Image 1 (cartoon, rainbow, N blue to C red):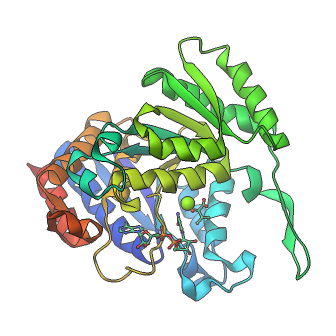
Image 2 (cartoon, rainbow, N blue to C red; image 1 turned 180 degrees about the horizontal axis):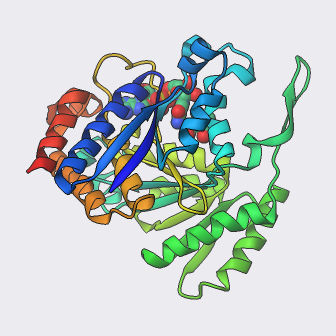
Length: 354
Ligand SMILES: NC(=O)c1ccc[n+]([C@@H]2O[C@H](COP(=O)([O-])OP(=O)(O)OC[C@H]3O[C@@H](n4cnc5c(N)ncnc54)[C@H](O)[C@@H]3O)[C@@H](O)[C@H]2O)c1
Ligand SMILES: CC(C)[C@H](C(=O)O)[C@@H](O)C(=O)O
Ligand SMILES: [Mg+2]
């Protein structure tokens, strides 16, 4: 199989972890006889510096000509004071909207060998295996009006039935293939948009009698997520709640650096990126955890290209290396062997090569 992949490394550790994901995909290409052609483009702070735009037109064109998009992360203190249309994060929102990447899958899985660093008790964290399905192109992030002056500020939380239904159907389908449990998270006790959200979930649920579903209010969901996380299978929620809950859930695994994500259009075209940001505090030191980015590459193989065996091979290699006691620096207090980003990547690559 031959595929063209748009590579948007972005800023900070985005560059380092994307290189790790490419190294792993190159290995998969050799082992399974696939050819990946990499087309690099600019996004985020680096793009602002070079072109004056967080998402240049050339990057959009490059992505349109590609079979999938691999992204690192954007942002950093250098651009923090920029006006909102010149923030690196704007580029990320624009690419999500442009390609209609409305369904964001964020799997959260606890690895036995890293549980000692989870702030949760080992028996609470140990069986965690859930997917947070986050709506990605609506809600507060995109609603108009949206502006502020020195006295007033406004953001708009807007959802249409179609936008909600698209992501909710995806979540029910996923729950059906998994353990048949779905939690829809909203704030229907206060927000009008959540009232519509709940109605749509009720309507869609009628088509999935095999899925056991429940509504959870977001504040209680935040508590339950770390009190008994292993009871969750699939969580579906709107854009902002999903952003917050996924960073919270990462804590169960021991590090934000562990979580991958897939942002999908309904036809399967996708952008793949780790959940974390550009981590300016550790950027340029070759110490970032590449696992979230590497597992995002596995999600790309599975979701966009139907390469199941190849995706399984990456996930198995990551598991094996973690179980063998290797980790990156954020796990340094658990007596495991701490590796740099590139050495951790090399271990995973060697494991894949067999
Ligand atoms: N998808 C994205 O591009 C994305 C996501 C989140 C934040 N951001 C942006 O990134 C910048 C920094 O944001 P932040 O510091 O709030 O969030 P962050 O996710 O970059 O970092 C939060 C904390 O987690 C640690 N961390 C993150 N990824 C790690 C990894 N792979 N290995 C080890 N440790 C890791 C960081 O060192 C930091 O202490 C901001 O500009 C923000 O807007 C971008
Ligand atoms: C950088 C920011 C715009 C982004 C978001 O809020 O969606 C990030 O936090 C994420 O989770 O991908
Ligand atoms: Mg986030």
